[in-house]
Length: 426
Ligand code: AMP
Ligand code: GLY
Image 1: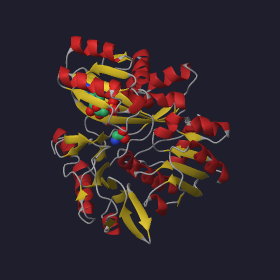
Image 2: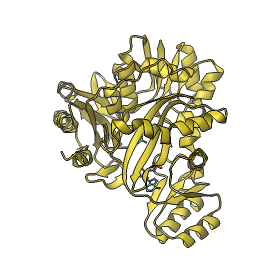
Image 3: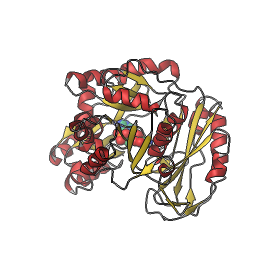
């Protein structure tokens, strides 16, 4: 099989690394890729948003399966464009990708499907949104409808803050057209967890639970990032709850979209919050989380190429998704300053030494390979991921490996996994 992976982060390095292990995979291309994917396959400089470029590349390389890493190309219609050429794509159609591409669509599908989620209203007009917020009062959550690079969700504590946020989104258009429409919803409280399932349009196969660490600072302080670390399983969502959770948050969505003639094929990611009324869905993503993907793929003990092709073809029936019982934990090493401005171009040393720690695999995110050396090129630089007998051991191995890696202006959180350890009394 010849596979093309779209994207350039740590998630895509992990996908490339795992797909490389499949005896079905002969050739692997990554567009545009990074310093890590360059060691697993061939990087091709086509941007992940360049749909015509990606389709042309897939035809030229006679690709059997395109794997979409990020959401943007899917929302733009990558799957639809490939389907016209008869090329299977792991990742949903543009319609189904709206589960992530439009918060209003996503919330409406949740309500139609009976999925537990915060009560909400959708507004297209600033004046109406303002009147509603003034009447309701804070706390509330205000979400720009469209994709806003992970910044379009604001939890507001006061009415003034709510009004300022509405004005930013709907009048000042700080997120461009993503803020033409907003969702205003009830603010929930509780611990968050991620739950992902491979989907073939009708059937699904669940992955183990995971937990992200979105805030940049230790103790979940400071601005939100793409994710500073993750681990799997998340003690708040233990294995014996996977099936009932899937029945609650995955199956109804698949049925709804199949009934609309728009089957969801790919990986469906439910972002959950454990409230005192039980789990509620905060959002859906239509792709693997980054960095959640890294610990999940370290645990996956089945052939990823076989699973992905089966999803794309709508035939997950005979395919097994097996995971190792151990815990995996990923520490993101970033550039100091991220998610704000940060320096680039630092030389990175110690990756082979870190990989030598038992159970450890270092995935690369914002890196490039040049003259046999690795240099930083982004804010999140490395994803140091370790498999251990339990959470404490995975954490120990990951941080031991982190200690062997050196580059200037390095920053990482020292408390990845701490919340999970507290929950299990570790
Ligand atoms: P989303 O992009 O919808 O996942 O939102 C990003 C983050 O905002 C989530 O991970 C939560 O931490 C927070 N969030 C979203 N919706 C709510 C809500 N209804 N109540 C409280 N926090 C929320
Ligand atoms: N780590 C969260 C996300 O990928 O959306």
